[in-house]
Image (tube, rainbow over all chains, first blue to last red; front, side):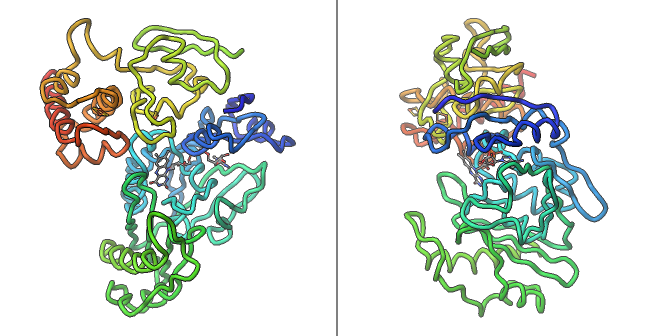
Length: 264
Length: 157
Ligand SMILES: Cc1cc2nc3c(=O)[nH]c(=O)nc-3n(C[C@H](O)[C@H](O)[C@H](O)COP(=O)(O)OP(=O)(O)OC[C@H]3O[C@@H](n4cnc5c(N)ncnc54)[C@H](O)[C@@H]3O)c2cc1C
Ligand code: FES
Ligand code: FES
């Protein structure tokens, strides 16, 4: 690991000051992705700005018809939150299956979505629940946030402060995990809010994406069988040592049907 | 050089570190607590698990400076003098180790589980061990040991 300066601001305002004007500064949240990256010398930040000391970025609150989760809220705290469990149990369930206990004790929602690993779990929930990401500069709709492999709409000096999830009528997440890391080989998040259905797939492409044919079919009939006739084309899907694109295409259908069944 | 002050196994410790020093390096190389192992150094194996403020974390994936002011518990802090902690005793009784390399991390993860789930099922234990890899035992006796250790901990309370 190259050495770096380190700062631990106490407020978002101080963090914004610390990152402004230094193109080589880097934020660290749970460090579960960034520290391994630094060890491989894939990044050489001038300064690490640790968001861990900022109380205003932590916690879950109900805001009208939405659940708002602070960027520095750890996976374990989302999994255990009574607010999340009662309003969006599918989201608590997703958080409780990220990695392993030690990863959940450090990793954060803000770090996960900012990193946008194509196999991460949270992006599927953000897209399927049509969440809004609040940053130090603006609000970003889920559909505009995730750009591509490890790429988001965030500017270099922009900090995610919270994610607001509208409460759905029904929702569920099913993933086919990599047996070693628990990252999604394919994960599908389905959500129904009023007449509106959204289906988001993670693990299979360069980032979470919506399966619009499934959304249309489920809007007509919210039933796993409504997806039976649909086939996903493997073209453009990920293919690696864990699974071929054909296998991933097949898994999308299977996970989506199981998710609808689970949502009830 | 930055300095960190933290509590390790109940005792205050202060050390000069680099910003890039990992918690596990501070523990092993500067404080001489070599019970915490480094198996992979890539955040996957769990040999380096310690408790930070009561929760299990991978000490190879936390900077020492991030542990400023924290309360750290390592495998060396579990036993009461020469009397093994109930989880350590259960690992010995049930042959929960062979080479022993993964054991400090296994025991620290297990103690965290037993604190949070008084009566874990075999399924709970196997899920909890997702981040702890053992290349020797096949896990069977580790799971048995954790079940017995958790029962002993609940009984001792
Ligand atoms: C062994 C292992 C298994 C894992 N398994 C899974 C899994 O099954 N599913 C899954 O989804 N994930 C998994 N992860 C990833 C984990 O969930 C972390 O959440 C994820 O690595 C990033 O979160 P973090 O808080 O650790 O961020 P960090 O590593 O601290 O940061 C990641 C990136 O985001 C940036 N960043 C952080 N916070 C902000 C912010 N508020 N605003 C703007 N940018 C920010 C950082 O600068 C950095 O570039 C696993 C990780 C490990 C080590
Ligand atoms: S050495 Fe830390 S997880 Fe393997
Ligand atoms: S006992 Fe040898 S690695 Fe677990």
